[in-house]
Amino acid sequence: MNSDSRYLNTFQSKIFVNRPVNLRKIKYYGFDMDYTLALYKWPVYHEALFLHALDSFVSMGYPKELGALTYDIDFPVRGLWFDTLYGCFLKVDSFGNIFMCALGYQMKSKREIEELYPGRFVTFTDRMYIFNTPFHIPELMFFAAVINYFVEKDQLSGRSSKTGVFLAEGSFKQFSELFADMREAIEIVHMKGRFKEYILEHISEYIEKDEKIPLLLQTLKTEGRKVFLVTNSDWEYTNGIMTYLFDQPISEDIKGSNWFKLFDLVVTSSRKPKFFKEGTELYRVDPATGEHVAMFGESGSGVMQPNCVYSGGSVDQLEDALDVQGRSVLYIGDHIFGDILKCKKHKGWKTFLVVEELDHQLACWVKCKPLIRELERVDFIKVNNHRGHYSLACQASEAEDGEKTMNGGEAMTNGLSEVKMGLKEKLRAVDLTYGKLGGLFQSGSRETFFASQVKGYADIYATRCTDLLHYPLDFHFHTPRQRLPHEMACEDIPEWTSVSDSFDREHRQLNKMTSAQASVMMNHLPNIAAVNSDTDYQKL
Image 1 (cartoon, one colour):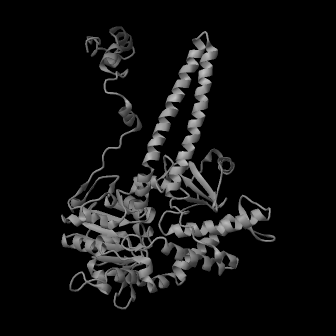
Image 2 (cartoon, rainbow, N blue to C red; image 1 turned 180 degrees about the vertical axis):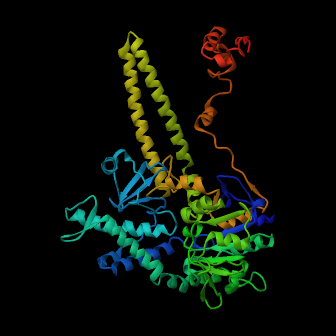
């Protein structure tokens, strides 16, 4: 958007592409607020939420000793599944194959995983809960710390259960019951507690002020684009956060508490993903007083008007108000399910996923490049050892001195075992570079469930929404065709190598239907026999 050298594209401000997005065709830019426009400071904000959750949990009658638990900044990674039956955190791929399994902080062995999940495989059912968003990171940490506390107490007392923990003598709590109470504690913090008030009172400690946010919105407006805000946060909290972010003058009439004038429409308390389907009751909000006026009644669910602030409503009302035509919306958010998946499935909007951890993932990937190359080399050795072992086995069945040949195969097998052990160590080293539970997008050399969701629903993704400033508004994001594994394997084949091709023209010509074969077949095809009576198949 700006040719100034200050905004030259850099690797860590790059926008990554899953599917083409032509910004020339985008006329409407929609934004979420939390973790999109308003960036929370990690990990201090998560620690604050973690401590508020513990306080809420203790107020429900749980041991006061839980208040001494601390936040482990290296443990949580989003994208995990939580099994409410066994109390385990599962890191899986898109098919449910389990990479890692932890009970509290304790990692399960392959044998232990197999006992709970035969084949180390699990399907997504109602008993599973997904930690998908940045808000889920402190929640995950809270769950893990609490479960670990009770599990360790049981282990010291010589008690154990696959499906729950003992709170006190004779008092047993199923993991599903513990989960329900922990979720209630979190809800109290978000909806009923003083957490949001606390954040607003100490806003500079927990919210990152990015001067590029007002610049991005102002640039979009100057270029004739319409911008709107759809957030699940209520008006009071939204106004407090946005006033802080826009405390520098943007224009003569837009500064601080007038921030909403920069948007063509503002929707608070949207209750996404419900907003993108049936919606909720619509209220018009008076920005000056915060008063909510109902816009629904006997006549219908209400109508939105541009340049207004609302609470609730639906995506259909928003599109009508802004006169959205076709697939001309790019919606930007951090919630893979509530922001990205639903608006794409129900409205076909283009999607931009904000993944703040991307900087960390990129940095770790760069650090791991030597290890990754070593893993590729080890994989190559494994494949060739398997081929060599097969070749020696074939020779053994034909050779007179079969004993010598098999001794060679045995030595190769021993070498392969050493290679496999080295591979496990290197894979674990790669995972630990990211954190105790590995990377967000991969576990070892395999893609995670989170990665599959990003690929499936986010058209483009980046660390911050302000990375758009590095691209002109007529930019066309293209994605290079992803080569299949057999195509990538061709890189290792020298150009002069003759590759067997059983489907080339020579082979096809030799295997064509002969005249004799055609004649026999025509006896069974009377409807076309006359038409093909003069056909000479050998000459075609």
